[in-house]
Length: 461
Ligand SMILES: Nc1ncnc2c1ncn2[C@@H]1O[C@H](COP(=O)(O)OP(=O)(O)O)[C@@H](O)[C@H]1O
Ligand SMILES: [Mg+2]
Image (cartoon, rainbow, N blue to C red; front, side, top):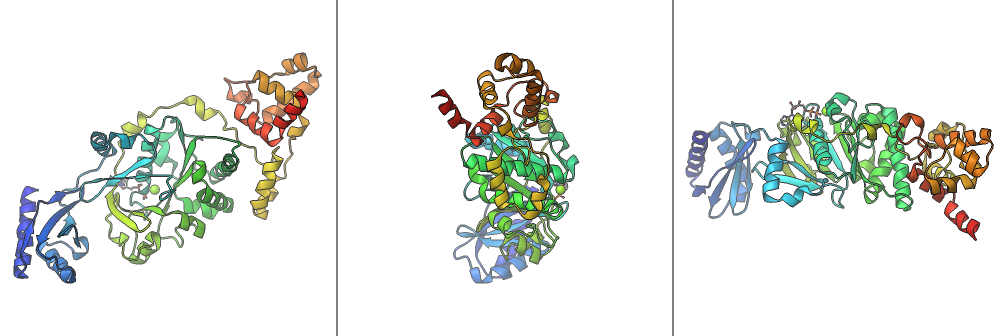
């Protein structure tokens, strides 16, 4: 490497002396896959920069497209591909951050994106005003799924339980080693119907959160190949749009990845495009595609080199990075829980008791969705009010208890138990451990939505 660097420096001096320009070449900076040479000149010459770049490429025997000459701080910066590529690993980068800015690793959403060509670590906090959500683009095999793994690992390692994950990928094997890890809110899925249902629940949860009915953990929703999902499921588009527009302030953050090359990388949705101000773009096919995906006409993402070579775009700013690879042993070491995967997330059975919420949904849902709700409805109102208060006070119930404590007939008590079970207020038996225990969050929703808090007051007076 040393010899190659000296050789390059020699060639650079040759070029500029032939052009009769006086320069000094500074200490080269060795990045993961690039070398950067600072070239000091008393008056850097902007006009001829293209010409210099061409001459330098020829002298160094590198394709002109792979060479970049830009004006840095009082000097030119010449960047060329490095003959010795260094692998960037998440472990390596994390250690570096830990040594110089350990606090940066406190927040699970402060994501390490990669290493710049000059060897600097690039990080960005997700879920902020400037970077509410993240869009990831690139051709097949350019490094998107690897990068998703890198993001997921960081969140899973750093969260104390207050940030949860939802993962969808049609290539479920890409993420199989995350299955059963603690931060997962639902099992990882490759099923468009299931993820659409999960999105619908999150959308309702967002609504409840915004009305302060419900508090909850921050949720990062990772959708790999999301445009395929949206093409398959019209309803998914609706939910993704809702979440991307309003989710951030309620702690729901989207990480969307898709292949380029299809007609519309934003799933045909201007809403999604507008809300993805934060993008990581890997190699794309051509200049037109690059402009389309990045929103910058001259970003040249088609000249990226694949395998994790990317550009981070944040509004008008952009930064080249090499994304890190995750060591699988790191994923193996993530905390796991068998139990959390088996418990149902309470939220809502679609189309059941929550009339206020149903109304809210119906106002917004397209016609086609309403047909889905033609199912037998269980009426929360049919469960006597004293049962709700009993549940709240005792925290559990069973058929025997309803008979003994509240004086119901055995048959009625059994029916009530079954309804509670269906409503997931009482955790169903198959989810074991908490049989007959009350699902408190669920119960609180019921209280709120049925106005039972008020009812109790009037009962007491
Ligand atoms: N950051 C990286 N560093 C080195 N190699 C990478 C990196 N990212 C991806 N690769 C290589 O490229 C291959 C394809 O990456 P992948 O993430 O599956 O692509 P995509 O999801 O964009 O189709 C990986 O199997 C790996 O060999
Ligand atoms: Mg992939």
